[in-house]
Image (cartoon, rainbow, N blue to C red; front, side):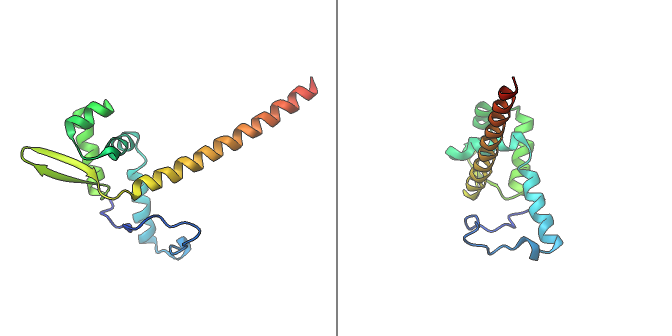
Length: 136
């Protein structure tokens, strides 16, 4: 798994093409793929969303997500190993927080892209419906 290997700066866009994917080594691409694998699990995304409002302990995460304790602990360990969350011991409690808010920028970019795809598919569906009605 990835250990905080990705840049801590904000995401690069077309306006700042510092990361030319075609110039990355296979090792670098593997690190990037591993990072996205961590984000490919629904429970981990639920935990990330839960932590958007701030630091929480395992009990609070369980309550907010509805996930089981063993499941939450397993996914927090994976998220921590990937450098997405950090843990902070406060007395007998351990609190987890997002290590770098860029993760929310990434999620927002993905959501925007998916929203656009759905909108385009809906437009195509409407065009097909109109064509179908013209044949009736």
